[in-house]
Amino acid sequence: MRVTKAFGLSCVLMLVFVLSSKAQEASITLGQPQIGLNQYFTITVTVKNDRLKQYSTFPDIEGFIKRGTSSSTSTNFTNGKMTSTQSLTQNYQASEKGNFILPPFLMKINGQDVKSEGVQIVVGDAVQQSRRRSAFSNDPFDNLFGNQNQPSEFVDVEADAFLAIVTDKKEVYVGEGFTTNLAFYVAESNRADMRFYDLGTQITEIVKKLKPNSCWEESFNIDNINGESIQLNGKGYTRYKIYQATFYPLNVEDIEFPSVGLKMIKYKVAKNPSFFGRNRQEDFETFYSREKKIKVVDLPAHPLKESVAVGNYELVESISDGGYETGQSFNYDFTVRGEGNISAIEAPQPETGENFDFYAPNVRQNVNKSNSRVRGTKSYNFYAIPNEPGEFKMSDYFQWVYFNPTIEKYDTLKSDLVLTVSGESRKNQYIASTDLGDFYDKINTANNDLSSLNSNSWIQWMINFFIVSVMGLTVFILLRKTT
Image 1 (cartoon, rainbow, N blue to C red):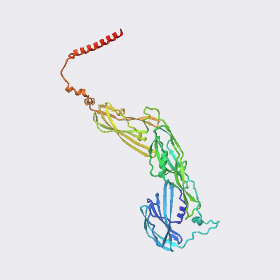
Image 2: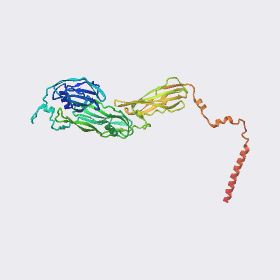
Image 3: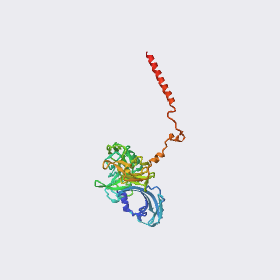
Image 4: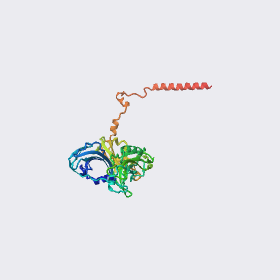
């Protein structure tokens, strides 16, 4: 944004000595070393990108009297970067003509020691600063110093800037990520002087309105708002990203972003600027974004449709070194790497059978958010024990299905490893180690003597005779009742 008129006029009348390095945030500037008896010598302390919170006393100058202070604040957008400046100026009036020395001095500004090398000040005869102005006068000095008896009139300068919600996709599948950013755009041709206002509070409220309830969010956590130069329709802009996140729809409900407002401090400028007068007035303007809608499409039919991850992925696998023998454990890493909702990736489910025992894996996850993309890895480290010798394809145990939105198809990540296991089968060991219960526990205490199967036949004969007798008696009673 352009420098204010008052500051431009000040630069014409003042020789600026900036005594601090570019890396410093605080500096001391001395005024013009040659002045008239009726002019002020000035010392100005300036803080960039911060408020002037505290400062030590301005130095006394022999032969000069302190005549009050004035302050100013400005915000500039230059080469894609926003800078704010706050200054405080101490005025000194000379008591007589002559040569005076301002020796080197230190001032503590916001806790930082800032040094000035001093200067020799030459005070000459009084300088004619203004003349009586007629109703038809066009004296440039009148425009420069202004008529202090007349109230300033301020006018609004139209801002060539706008607030916008931008997404990298207009239509997505359920589970497919799309990146959204809210940014403030300032045209290179903009002439309005503006700065951000209470941005932390505003962003908190804006995010509450923008974040969809039906999406998983991966926020980019913008800590510093820096401008970047871009071209839109052949016109140069500086873009200030305020909020950015990648969203993953959890259902087929369309995503609707409402219009949100960003309140900015915007300065009106004096209609007739002067050197000593007030040349701008603080005001506010709210910029509103347009509504935005993202269409969400359901995934194609598939048995695992409700549980698959969506994205562009690849498999990275590894296995512990050494020979593989039955009964000897090994570790196997199944790592999914790519772009998508890494947090939603679920582990492959190998089935434990006769050949292997697989145990629940240890999980590691790494998510990287940069360049408007969310990428990362999710690793599953399995502990396994082979039970049978032989050659085994690990793809028979480790498969992971996902949906690739780029090719709009389901795909499967399979292991490429073939494992050769040596050693003896563990089936017999398994049977021997199994607890067969109380039946086998009684073997050691059971009687080993042989006995005839017919030794107790008379007991069986008596039982049968009793049953037949009861049945015969029942039939006799039933027949007698019917006659």
